[in-house]
Image (tube, rainbow, N blue to C red; front, side, top):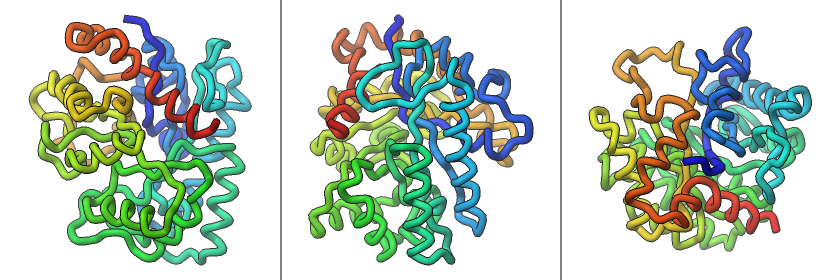
Length: 326
């Protein structure tokens, strides 16, 4: 089934910034390389600026912002910048940068002048951001990641949210602890902030009980606020043994009322230097790279009507960003 695809999360920029001789065209190296994207009819790909929590996080984030800019300025036959209004009409894959872990905006020692300057120069370099996630798996100065216990939104997290307000940049719930998600919602309400909420690459805890997955209450909050939720293709967050659980996560999103929210957020990243052998294979064959979208949609065609399939493939994300940037 050939529908255009918008995917909400991959780590192509981290691969290009970290790995010597890395190429966005190396299909044997990373599952979101250009040949896979084209084969899967991916017309818009969100590319995360990802860092972990360490002193060089701001430098690494800036390097990824530069890699993003290089792709859209030096590889114009292949890549373009997503304008938040239209699918590309020139055969390119449109890219859209995001921040995965605000440690890239401010390491643990950075002053707020340095954080504001980093935020502004990354936004200037990328022109716009699809979303910002405050944390990754662990704790940082802004709050608790999804593998932390008892750590919610910190004062620095509130200050960063205050700075995001009104900038048309959603906050991403994909790597929050439950306490952090709750704290973000409370602070947005109490401070009357203008910040949409999404989950760019998250599955559902009701289907697979994992801290990385969304509880239904947060998923429903995102849906109620007209946000979007991108289903994650990583085996660890689907069901380590049952490939078809991917379809159950997608259908659960629709069952929660997410006909206008459910999307794709595959989370393809460079796996060859990953230290934990228990995670291999990272993806089931049915979703092992970005060329698999047509077959995934075909598998869902007996369970979802044509409008829902179109929404899932691209329309929910396109409508969300069109509305946000109108």
